Amino acid sequence: GAAQLQQLLRPMHSTYCSTDHRLVWHVYVVLRDLGLIDNSGLGNRLTMQYASQLEMEGLWYEALFVLLHVRPAPCAPRLREAAIKGVLGRHAHRLRPAEGAEARTWPPQSPEDLVDTLKIPEAWVTECREVYEAYCRNTGRA
Image (tube, rainbow, N blue to C red; front, side):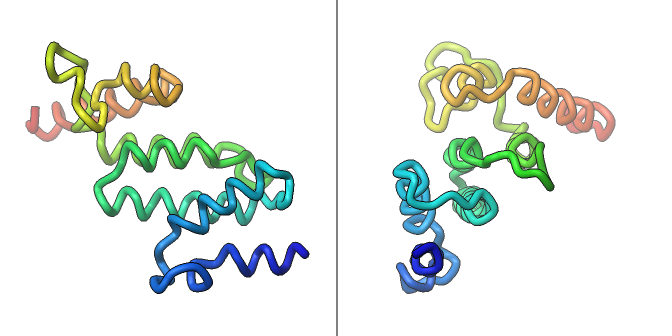
């Protein structure tokens, strides 16, 4: 039953590395979408761990995509927003308006790409970019 599925969703049962969440996160998403498991706490934990893993590997854009799968929880209704803003804040120096050939880089680095492609609310992207710009002004790192 549910206990066996939760055992399946432990990295140590699917890979040699107990901190590698790639496979278990994808398995969780499939099981959730099939209606075989419904545990937002477990799902959010796996999602946050996988996003963290991706970001540590330099895949911050992919981490944002994964974080879009965070589900609201009674104890943390704004968890998705906070997690996404955290990644945006750490990578705000990479966000710049798309211009010419740069508009076709991977990962997309313009605020427009995040809003258009990932559907991240523009207000979140703008807020993180403005905080970064204010930091640069205040520290003379413009």
